Image (cartoon, rainbow, N blue to C red; front, side, top):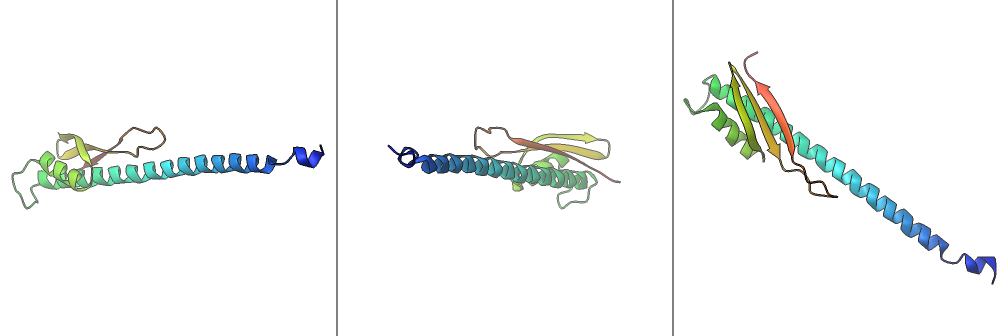
Length: 120
């Protein structure tokens, strides 16, 4: 048997292995991208919720007398997040929200973001 005949099919094995590595790297890159998007969405929801609550606390809203944390809950829900906590600290409001994270490659954690708002 010649040496060329013994090497027959070696390139196929190498190509399949490289395709698997590229697939894994692509999936991991997609997961990182999805985590970044979810985190940005969580931070935006937290920021907007804190601003809505601080505006309500200052009494400059369409629903006077409404609880600031209720306003924060509504704004968080409108932005695809769930309000985890809302604390009024003097004239400032501190909120924490949670957004469902991507469920790829064994990742099963939700993303949490916090924000504080009040008069400067």
